[in-house]
Each structure stands twice: as structure tokens, then as C-alpha cells.
Length: 154
Image (tube, rainbow, N blue to C red; front, side, top):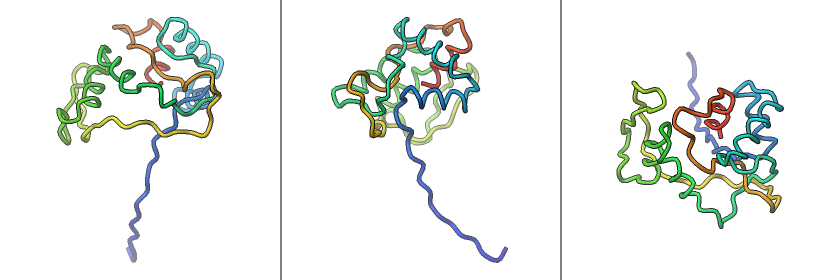
């Protein structure tokens, strides 16, 4: 080794999900087709678990209370501990251990958590907010692996 070069790289928070970004991300990360993604998203929407899935908006309006959306997840068997830690950062010391309710037996070491508003994109169709959960998933999931994966991703 003749030389070592260190540099710092910032990793940006993702933008809120628009329809196109949801389809691209589901294809890339969940290996779901665009049709399967939209079918599952529309079923989750009609059941009241996701916001309207056909939107080009990638920024939340200042009128939307995002903390309330996070608080809804405190009722989830999968995300309750994480949501509570986001909403109560003083109760979440650095490198705290949060039981991974999703896996049942393991715990995950995470850095200090604190709620931060998502990044704002440049698009706002004025009709619908970005795609987001509107209530906690039911215990035991949705009875469909595709809907479970998609909801977890959103």
C-alpha cells in the first residue's frame, strides 16, 4: 500500500414515494412487477392502509402532521418499538437495543433515533400527498406476501 485516501460521503435520505418511484423501487428492491406493485398498492389503499397510490407528488405538505403518521405505527406489532423510539428520543439512548418484533428473537443495535422530516422533492401535483401508510398493519399481516412486502417497504 503506497497511499490511503479517506473521504466522507453523505448518504441522502430518500424522497417520499411517488407512483413512478414506488414502481421502480419495488422492481429493484422487492423484485415485483409494476402491475403487481400497483395492484397491491391499490388493494392496500382501498382497505385504508396506504394513501392514494397514483400520485406524482414527492413532497409532503406542511399541513400534514408526520408525527401523527409515525404515532400510528406504535400500534403495529412490527414497528411499535421503532416508532416509539422516534417519537421519544430521550428514551432512546445511543446504541440502544430495540427488540426486533418482526423477527421475534433477535435484537438490533441502532444509533440514537430522533424523528426527522423527510426530504422534500420538487414535484407536487396538488391533489394527493406522497404514498405513505395511513394506519398500522393488522397483526399477522395482510394474508398476502406481496402486500406484506409492499407495505413494509412503504
